[in-house]
Length: 346
Length: 269
Image (cartoon, rainbow over the protein chains, first blue to last red):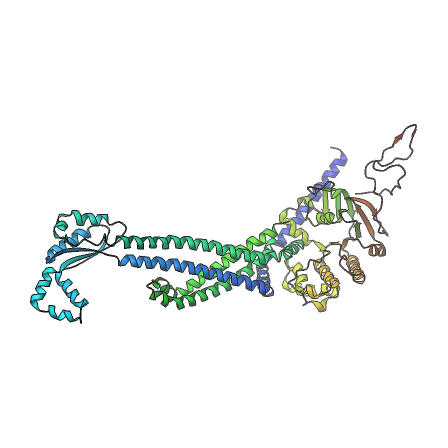
């Protein structure tokens, strides 16, 4: 290596050393006072929200509406499912037994059927109870006077059948119960051949309610998921448009040497404020709207209790927090994505 | 302070390079005008200095920093060492005059106390202290440019580059801005200004570098005047052109033809 080349190499080495030293010094300034930086970011975020009040309001309104739609979807799915479940719960199978069976026979039959895993509960009523039930149901009627004497009672008791009402876990599959009733020796003997058990009669009804319950549950989940995605997209687009109109600002800040986090920060804070306000507004509107609608829905036999229980307890605060949390998270994510697009351009 | 050594930049799709082996040395405390027609390469050169663009080849050293080592993560810090003024001011529209100037100091991590002390001083320098609470759209073009200058000098950079700072301003305001830049230069800041304004270049009589087709074609170190048609400085080693029958005594640059006026040769670092 010639003397000149060595001199040149020495110069380059010195330049590299000076450059690296300067760059390290720059990096140190970048890390100075993170709390002070955060305070400034928060200040400019809040100021930005106020100074862009029209854009901020528009974004907040859109966000609130989408959150309300999401709430309506989730609530509709929940109450539909619970209504369908409630109706399914009301379905029972009635097996008609021969009249005048003794308590022991009835109790044996109950034990046999209870052994089946699908059976939730069994209610049996003997002829006496059926007679009492008949009287209660027809109380005040003119005809009832005529059948109140002992002779008539004895006659009625001999005709009144004992019944067995079975509630099951799964109304879709009654084969095991059907098998016991048709094949068990005791049942074969005591079941009234004239009057068929109701599982066949209720089959169509059961199938309809079951399919509604299934549609309500799966459809509700899918619909809520779809609406969640749509909500995110709508909020994202709104925030992106708001940031698009301010992309020049991002570029200017970059040119004068602002760090990425310092540029991004105020935009995130603005979006979070939008999310916070939208969350509170949406939760309040949803709550009041539901309180207004709930009695009307209940009149139609819709089970609103699940939601009422939540909204009218101290869990209401959780509902508010969920709305606010969702608003803030979606707002922040959208703003971050939208700002990054302009921030990462050189 | 600013050193470019054989810097070449060609944008994809262009036939000729935007910068063609440009070499340039600006000393500390110099006031330099960079002139040339549109497309001559002035803006590309400015973008190289602000690290908005990277050269295809060559070396750039600004204020002792070799830009080859300035990675993406260093760019904000590097830019904070420069003062930059733009033709369209590039002020933050939703921040007041005070906040625009303070912004330059906040991003440098300066404390609130220091900022409250510095900003009024800088605004006083550009004679805008009474407009501190106004927003950029409430100011005239000249005032906006003064805010931009205040923002760029608030951190007391050693180098200030201004890309067509007077292009959008009237004659009187232009003079004001140039006087302001001169004042800043008197405080010891190196200033590089691109302009199309013949008057300000001729009046100030500072160093004038002329660019044409991506090359520096003239570099008048003192008392420079605005002259876009300066003949290119020969850069290749001169060689004798052998004419049939007799030899030329004087060497001729290989990009010159016989009979052309030859520009004085300048040492390019």
